[in-house]
Length: 354
Length: 250
Image 1: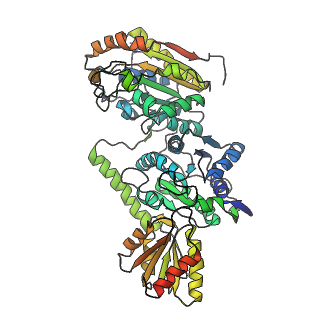
Image 2: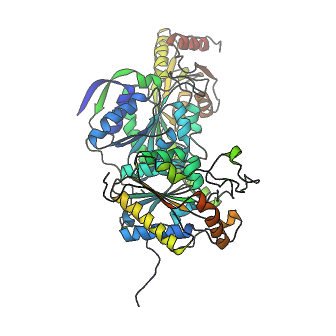
Image 3: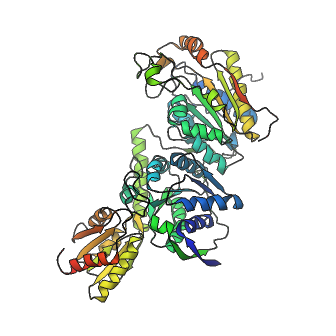
């Protein structure tokens, strides 16, 4: 059974996490993700779950690490500056193969930046969620419905591959309200976690959750094992949406809320006879390289539109080995690109002026 | 013939990496004996810190998690909130607990988080080769206070038990040491009591063990213990700083 309700993005995400079986949330207040934690604070005590406000983002992510290492389906949420603080814990969890969910409702940066929507943490999410060689699964929803649907998937994939997963949202998705269908998932059966540090009950050898390997060769062996897993993920888990891409000569690549603006511009371009399409990465890591290469078969030109100074544009170029020109258009945090601006960029490219 | 003395089951039969004369081995044993006597090894989760005891996960037979520097109380909090019936202890040194991990230590204490911290105070960073710790004594020579700790420049040492005992969430805060057999026995009692309090749900417990570091103090193990008596104990007096009593339920 499912129900259709009008909900704010942050609250819908929280409800979706609860329905996906999450009973352990650790957070620290920051705008614009506040409603997510507030929803958890209200709901968790009523369903036997844990909402705990930590003394810092650093403590919150390490509480997640403890609960997740003990086998719980645990999560935390924050916004951009908070992710910077959480990267220590994320690196440790990646290094100890501990699954969890991290939500980033992005705001402007760098520094304290602003509190308006932004996509300026793309590089951080896909390249640098902490020190060391590792990746995190990164999902980028573009609607509240998709955000809700991706939460359960992110938890499941984190468990499947034993690694942290991130929902990379933004202040627009967090703050806006949309009708959303919430599925009743019943009692979620979490996968067995025989590796968890939950007390051996005198039935097995002790489990150790650890990322320290003082023998360099052993460390390298484990990192290489993890990277072999990443290759499987790259092969199996790429997700993208193609909008009017089949014969598109100008392929506009955009993720998250920005893609909605792009779709409107693409639709208008089509009405004007320009063969434009929108290719929307849903997973940012793994990046949907296959979809980019497929699009390159018809595309003469790629354009990325982002709410940052041009970050994903690098991945588009790498995906197609720079075989087509790749342009960038964007604004920084809070200055949301308008359909007319994007259309003007498409027209410029179509007119051979770019 | 009856066995009078044996290795605790909760302690793994393996050589440790600790320096000769290092008291970590003694304290590990006291923790393990307490776990054995309470019969809780199967439901115990230990948190190893960053520092000399970072690889404590190789020495205890219970499930273990290695935490980022200073974050052991936060990791312990996560475990305990997920597994309320478990026994959760962190094992932390002075730099870990009260420099980089001050916020985590103070806030887990004030939350009355039902965990136990075993705090090894030897007034120095051991693992990194002997730098000034938050508990280094005034005038103490370390690698980073080569002219002695000048309190007007580097500040004063922190007395952890005194500090935490002001917080309502704390059920037990006791300072012990391991320089003599009677003191070791007292330390054992304190650790076991802290675990008992935790199992009874009484709140946050901490046992501070004033310890030595012969290697980085540049003294023989015996001289280090004398230095501990002459210098550490006057600044860090032994005793019970807070004990809500065995009757008071949380």
